[in-house]
Amino acid sequence: MHFLRTAIASTISLGLIFAQTPADIEQRIRHIQDAILPAVLTQGQPPATTKLADRMDALHVPGVSIAVIHDGKIEWARGFGVTRLGGPAVTPDTLFQAASISKPVTGMAVMHLVQTGKLDLDADVNRYLKTWKVPENSFTEKTKVTLRELLSHTAGMTVHGFPGYAAGAPLPTLVEILNGEKPANTSAIRVDTVPGTNWRYSGGGFVVTQLLLQDITGQSFPAFMRETVLGPSGMTRSTYEQPLPKNRMGEAAMAYSGDGKPVGGGPHVYPEMAPAGLWTTPSDLARFAIELQKSLAGKPNTVLSAAMAREMLKPGKNHWGIGIGTGGSVEHPYFSHGGANEGFQCNLVAYDTGDGAAIMTNSDNGGRLASELLRTIAYEYKWPDFAPREHKEISVSPSILSQYAGVYSIEPGFNLSITLAGSQLISQATGQEKVPLFADSATTFFLKVVDAEIEFPKENGPASQLILHQNGQDMTAKRLDDAEAKKVTDAAAAFEKRFKAQTPATGSEAALRRMLEELRTGKVNYDLLSPDLA
Image (cartoon, rainbow, N blue to C red; front, side):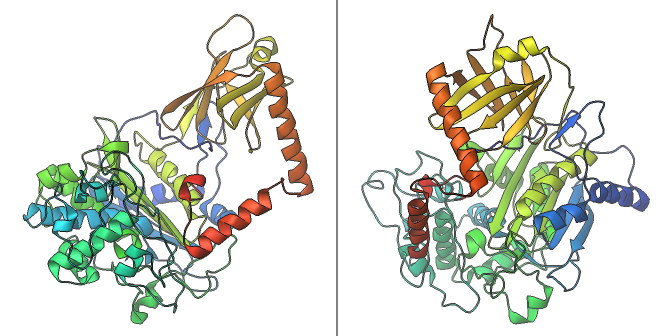
């Protein structure tokens, strides 16, 4: 479990009264480019900003491309950095892999066929599949898999995501991918829970959808998507072709790992096109978002009616719509999706009306940079979400702070140790570094490195519990007794000692080798991995 950034801003305004001039827009771009904001702001203190170029250098991100939507239009689009080390500059037309942002574009195509009466979201998908069928088992005896479930990650399908294939490597067919047969590098895509009962992210469900769309249309998936969504939405530079045609490789950014080294052989190939195969630009992703905004508003468009757009964005389990996540308030709802392929990470966020942004990078560290850019854009445009949270820091007596020192258990194996160093409270989560806490009040404290709060309910004497407010959730942690607390602090001290000495914990090498073997055979138990690692 890691501290996560939360989306909270202090002001609500999705538009400006006066139209922006080119000079105003350039000033906005300079503000964002020259002052990437931290996760948390403190009232009365200047924020510790950094320049975009410095963050790109620190995170080994060669290139980033951004498109910003304002008042339902692309207000600006710009590239920063290079497509490859020593190569040409990134431009707004540079192609990046959209990775999982391929999914909502696929979802829009499905909704178009639902609109024309060719598909039923709630029918058994085996009714449409011809080349392959979802294998029947005990989980599907009474409840059949539907498109709504496949596209909202509730079908009980396995296989979280796909690593892709090195350039030039043998590529499996869709049926081989679905059955986990070589040369496929992932396990068989199967139903292992009763459809409709649980939410679990599954790229595998979108591979089933890809085959279904090919079966009912008789077209290749890239051709169908070009005809149904990409062309009508004005996404003229985008394609689902995998691999990218050789005559277009000069338009593409090259992929880089987190250490700054290029991915061997260039960008990976993704025959799993529906969940991961879209090559596009931020401007084209913005056009996709604007098309959806137009549909919701009942404005003239070419893909979805207002009713179909509302159906696509209707929140289901885990606030998931058809191929896309939803969030925000009743007054300001938004839709969003992130993406991470080998050497590419990106993000798309757009409000149902008004503003949004698409950010694409060619680095495995690009997701972190995209989050930093998103909160800076949100602050600049005064969005109600995603901007840094602002706190007012106060001083609290050490005698009060001392009542909070202790070890608190959030869940088995995950604890928060609170210590007092002079007049400064320090928090340390299991397996993480020590982080200072700053007071909002005598009972609430915030972190400056991430957007999270710790609250100690008012009590007489030492605190018996704390509440961690983070990522829209409240997690209560009970204080451990002295004996249990000593075990935790001793383990933390041992970990710190091992880390400094660079010596492994007992069993860690065996666990790592087991995971590597699972990766090699394509049979990874994702349930044993953290969400980020998965």
